[in-house]
Image (tube, rainbow over all chains, first blue to last red; front, side):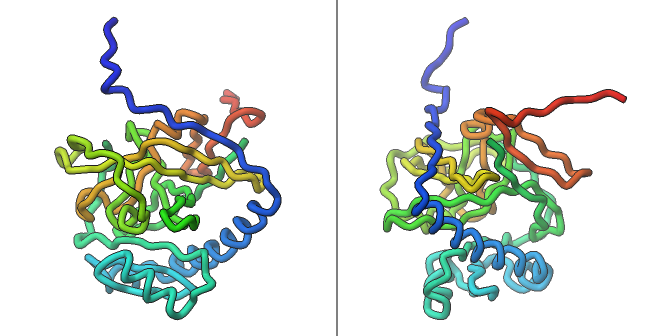
Length: 102
Length: 144
């Protein structure tokens, strides 16, 4: 069987990190993130419905909305500069079921 | 090794299998991202909002990535992605990843089989369980 190597995705290498200092910093970030994620879960309906087509950065258990991810993060950083658990979600313009495949 | 995800409500009121990860930005910070666990995706692909935050040089330009909606322009970048193990360690994945430039092409980054194939993937909606396992963690199918 001939294999077209150009069509095979390049390998992704895996490494396990166990450095205590690095993991301690990561743990703090995970805790901050968990609070933000929980907040979004509780406020999902209002956040999604009010900000379609926008980027939302969840930080400090609040939503910061902008036209771009960079702007949303910048807004969040002005209020919660120490929150490394922030994350961004783009809210699609239309509320429709989706099939993801690529 | 076990990496836990969760079933998370999305904007369309659909609950989807999600893992949280960190990506290493060009500024040297680890940025939190949500990834859809997508066994139908050949490769991991980042949405446009995440690409914007990467701050990394684009390695090369892909032709395009194909999916249900057809094909869309994408780029490739060398990146690092980090997942959290249940014992507190971090699994770091390094390689070439794809990203979309258009927000409409992909609204949520997907974790594809370039990473998922390192694991057995358990996505049990009824049990509200989502886990990636390998090494000392194994699964068994039991018939009563």
